[in-house]
Length: 253
Image (cartoon, rainbow, N blue to C red; front, top):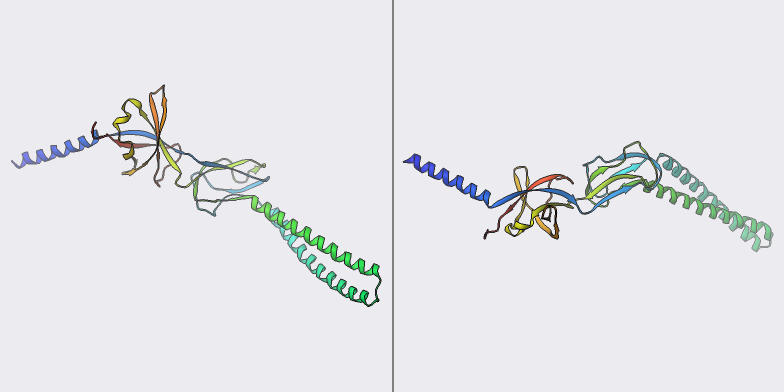
């Protein structure tokens, strides 16, 4: 008697599982991104570092950087010259102030006063040039690297470290975090049979709910299917990866 009861329960469990399987279908889907960005270098140089394909980065991290040793050395030289120019300007201003007082007391000619005033003007011009040179060099150093404006991941590395790159050379393709989607082709004839808003993606032993993004209005005449897109949850999927999704049938089917 116990044997019959156990067998009955087992058959009931298997039947329920089979019924559950029959109420949903599996489809292959492709991971894609709506927005990815190709980064290029702004200036000629040697690529010092670039993140590897698949590497994740945070906002503020360096994605790639060109060698800036020459620019750093030139910047240091300009900064040293700036100190000297500032000192010389202070000296020339002091001298001019003294000469001006002497000129007011009629103890100095107009020509000598003009000469000292010209020295002050030349020092000010030199200081302005130094400031421009320093700003330009700092800008060049900044433009030889890319600082991430958001969290993301490197989809593809298009240049390698130590490579000499020309202006405009593509370096990496990056993706903004949480910007992955799935697209799946579903047969038009049975589209209404599926509960499109209750689909899940299989991730190992887990089944993660996915949010319906859109259902295309265009029919692929060759396969008689339509494209359905879903927003992916935060899971370790990669662009162009093929994954499986499950989709339950509508109750009335």
